[in-house]
Image (cartoon, rainbow, N blue to C red; front, side):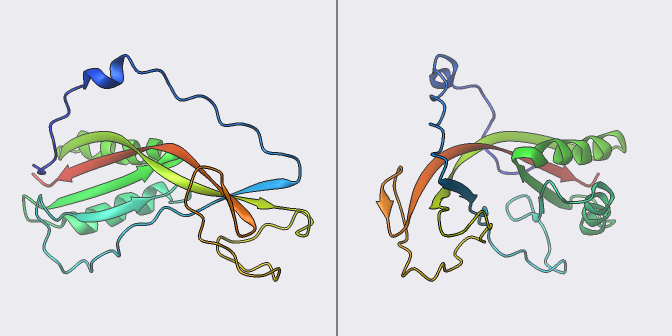
Length: 174
């Protein structure tokens, strides 16, 4: 099984209040979510172990059957192969459904939940006329600053931190 910390509940999170809701955006601002960054995926020919499993990132748009086929192909036929499914936000349900399918077929499945902080850009939408820009796209109004902080204006955008839920589903071939 994976070298993952034991999942014992921490008393510091039990009595902790949830964070206050984020303030609403002014009408002339829009929120652009940055993509979650992850390391490059190694080729399928690399052997997987519990310390370096083959990883599949599941998004909300990943087709269910494609995720299953990809995981089955990476698991192979030899016992002990490990595949790690990672998902966040709306994709958590899909990753859990894939894990449940493997559990019902007799494979070893372990689930770990967590969270991560992500940064979103708050962009002034007056000149954009409602047009959605991709993250990092230039507006033509000068250089954008690489904003790091909790809402401080830098360049022509602000940055807002938020937390998102994540899940890891470890599937082991038996």
